Length: 335
Image (tube, rainbow, N blue to C red; front, side, top):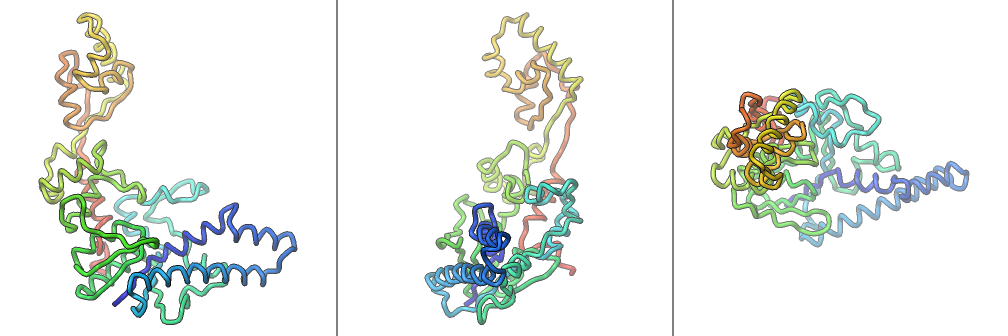
């Protein structure tokens, strides 16, 4: 029996305590005012953090893994680089405001273990018998995925809040999940195999990792596509196709739509009902971005000409997103 813990849990707990109204911040303010010594500060921080460890230990025992080997995985400082070479804005939504130019292929994050050391804790000795794992080039997810892949028959529970790890059920049918509050049943509510989880998320997008997915698609439609086609390779090309127009084209189309509306005495409500909301945006001289079905609907208006639009495909980009999401990651196979 094994327990795998996403070390991000400790970092998030520390961040909460260091928030403007957090207890660590309040205690540090006392140190700066001379009302508390540094030694007292570290003592109080350690006591507080031991409370977090006790909480986690309690949840582990409640899950029935009190005697299991406990492994804690931490993010590496260069863990965004491999995925960043594919998508430079990977996890850009987690970058501090002070960072002006972000490129995940080059941006190194702060060593999360330093957060623990800053309050007098040793990340390699959180508890007697607990094993810490760290690789500067890999995320905690990668370390967890590699552990599961190496132990496909073992009884393992993963403590995490990251649903990306659910795809590991395809590697180990005994896998269980806990979100630090309660056990989570990873049985796929979408109706497709976990083998295709990365395909689904590449289509639907993942805001937590700054992965947009297919424009204007969303989780529900992505689910339908995966149920019907199984994997990205089988999804119709039209799903990845979209159309745009330049500002100059939008201004020309605006005049055409206005003339057509006046000539045929058509209300704006009728315009929207027959050709979609995009026609009203174009009427106002605004640029648009349309998927294939919305574009086809718009083109049924005789006032418009497809030559004013540019056709694009985001298929290659979506396939790249899948590579980023897949666990165990194919990016480390040759390392």
